[in-house]
Amino acid sequence: MIIEDENGREWTTDELRDWDREPTEPDPEPPLTLEEIAAAYDAYVAGGAGAEGKAAAALLLEEAVPQMMAKLGGYHEAEEVWAELPTRTEWTVTASADEPPGTEALWQISPEDAEQVHGRPGQLWCRTLTIGAPVAISSESPF
Image 1 (spheres, rainbow, N blue to C red):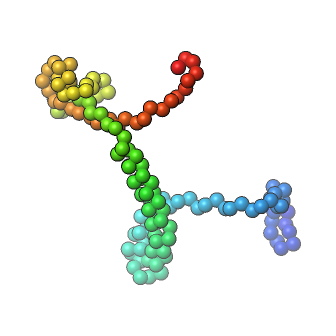
Image 2: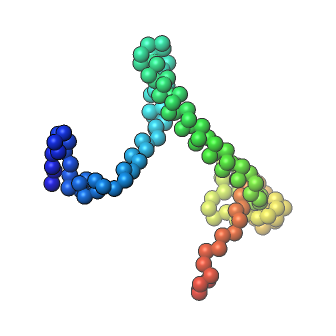
Image 3: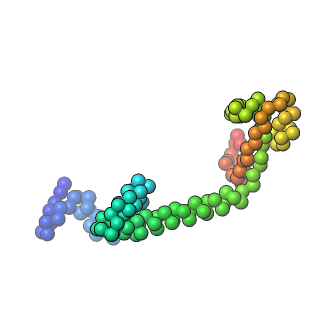
């Protein structure tokens, strides 16, 4: 149900039910998308010193740059965490360089082991795995 007050504002019954509660902060605007940032940059380049260029520059400086800096800071933190994790290199052999290892490849701890297990000449491949810390999943039976 919609009710109009003496100032002409329309209220729903849900709003009236909650009128005495403390106002909440409005939901923040969603972050700009990469397409929106690219469009603002293009408008800035095309608009130059004109009104459109100034509006695009303001959007870039006030919203896009702080948003991108925060995101970049998060990526740097994640990269530092990944860089500290231990790694392990594994090796396998395929018949030729034209045949990369598939999901069924048998990976070994050393290149010598890979050549010995596969028992044939061919292309030696390696991969480096990042090993995260063990995470306890469950202590309940059947685990």
